[in-house]
Image (tube, rainbow, N blue to C red; front, side, top):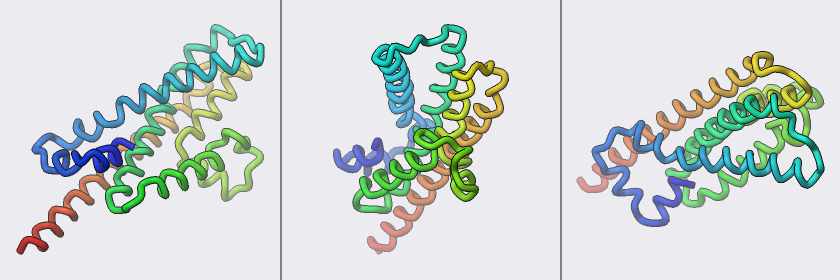
Length: 186
């Protein structure tokens, strides 16, 4: 959404033409989305447990907060990958709606990974939130934070992979647009 908002407001050209380092430039674009994702997850956990009358076990809340943060980072960088792809498309919402549907199907939010066919579990391993959702289920079932650390490490690695992919795609598309623009001028 950050990239599409830059495009809609007419500031994307200035962002692309700026001489700023690209990692802080694009990395800074995801920070508000990470904070928003974390706050929304925390609010929904509190509101949902209050509405359903479910007590939140206090020893689990630290692990839940860490899991929320890692999930928010993973989703934000996945969104930046979608933003990079949206640089080459006219309608960013087609890509975001497809991605949202795929996240619902493969993340494990609605259907536990154990109940999925093998091919779906394979796709779920590279889907944001999938490892974090498994960790949350385990935490609420009584697992310790140390026991869910492998899931969180996998989610963190996925976030790093999406960050590298997003920055690579942004760099490539920026380079292609400059190369194409110079051909149009000549």
